[in-house]
Amino acid sequence: MMAPDANTGRHLPRRALILLAILTLVWGTNWPLFPIAMREISVWTFRAVSMVGAGCVLLVASRLMGLTITVPRRHWPTIGAAACLYLLVWNVASSYAAIQLPSGQAAVVGFTMPLWAALIGWAVFGERPTVRIAVAIGLGAVAVLLLMVPSFAAYGDAPSGLAWGLAAAIGWAAGTLVLKRGRVDVPAPVLTGWQMLVAAVPVVIGAALAGDHRWFMPSTTTIAVVTWITLVPMTIGNICWFAIVDLLPSNIAGLSSIMVPIVAMVSGAIVLGEPLGPLQWLAMALSTTAITLALRPRPRQA
Image (cartoon, rainbow, N blue to C red):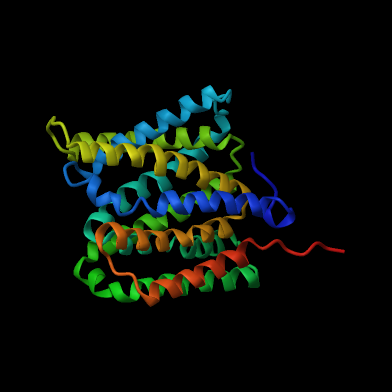
């Protein structure tokens, strides 16, 4: 399923933009729901239910679509490593960040991922970015910094929340690079489903050891929110993400997620009354410019 570099074709950037629009919407609106989902249940219980549920839904849907859910043995080491680095670390760490920081601020820290992906790719794999991509990454970094400026006090008051957010971002970046370089030739829904279930194993164990330790029926609101997160952001969102990773180079794929914290900020302002002002709108403009630069096709060689 690995496609050519997005910059070498005409239609891939457009498809990537459509996927990016869906991803931005479903992931960005997801962050304000985290604190609501975990008012009654623990992080581990929440993630165990949502990851197992999303993985099963994806594999069943894949079969109904006529896709084979068998994965060649040679891909399992890459899938396992990527799932643990991204889905395991990200889902647990981002959840803790979301309950220790305001949701929009937690999203901003977590979505420093493109910066870490660029740094890791350069330092470990020698993926030196082009000037255009470096400028795009720089604009994205400035956008993230602008979003963090009003929240420095909150980060100082909740340093563990900041640490969890950074851990989530670094794990996501590392997992994306492992998956991209592993060239896993598996359809996105199947790949996403299996990675969810692989990463869910230690999360289920964690839920048994550090979860709620009692059986009870959560409120209708909690059930509805957890169900929504499972079916939409975790299922549809991750399909879009792995498709974007398949279409684009890793540094551009990482950069494509930079709009998500903008939507998270707007959603947090609407749902939770979190701040939204000129800095957030300026960051949105910078993020849009960064993505436009990153996804613009290179001119064809004569």
